[in-house]
Length: 221
Ligand code: ADP
Image (cartoon, rainbow, N blue to C red; front, side, top):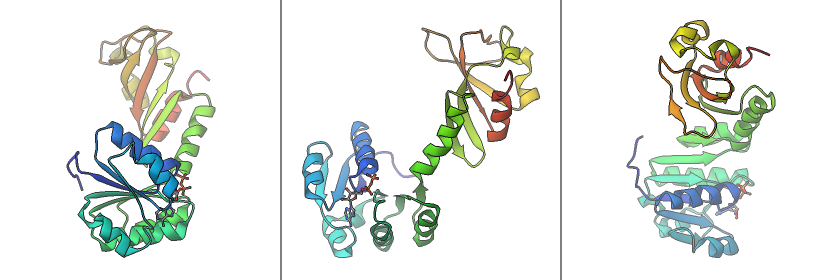
C-alpha cells in the first residue's frame, strides 16, 4: 500500500474537500489531475493544479478516456451525491486503481465505500466533530487521533510535572503517557527528554491512548 511519494494523484470532485486536497497536493508539488463535471469549477482550478478536466466520473468510459486507469492514487471527493460517490469509487476499483481514498458523509456511506473496495475512507465531519468535542471541553488545545486508540494532544502541563525533570515527575509510569515535545513562549518547539523541565507557561505535546490522555488532561480540574 505504500506507493511512491511522487505519484500523480487523481482527484475527483472539486467541492470544498476536493479543492482543498488538490490545492494542498499542488503546494506539495504533486502532479494532480482534477475532475469535476462542473465546467466553471474546472476552469477556476485549471490554473492551480497540473490538469483539470470536465467529465462525469460516473461513466466508466469517460474515466478511461481521461486515463484514470494509469493512476496509482485517486481521491473520491464527492459527497453531496452518495450515488455518484459510490459509482465513481466502483469505477476506480474496476479500473484497478491500486489506492483509492474516498470521502464519506455518513457511517453507512463509509461502510458501502469500504465494501466496494475503497482502501481508505475519510469522514471529515465526524472526525472534526469528535476533535471539536475535545477542544471545547477546554482540557486540550489541540487533539489528533491517529487510529482507534492512539492520539497526540497539545495542552498546558498539569501542576505535578512542572518545575522538575520529566523522568522525576514519573509521568510515564503514573499516567502511561509520554511528553513528546515542549513549547515555551517565544521559543521554537523542542523535543522533550528525561531531563526536560516544564515550566508554568509552557505548552506540551503528549502521546498515548485516548483514555490515558484524557485522564492526564483532567488532572488539576
Ligand atoms: P464538498 O462538501 O467537499 O464541497 P460536494 O459533494 O458538495 O463536496 O462537492 C462535490 C463536487 O463533486 C462538486 O464540485 C460536484 O460538481 C462534483 N461532482 C459531483 N458529481 C460528480 C460526477 N459524477 N463527476 C464529476 N464530478 C462530480
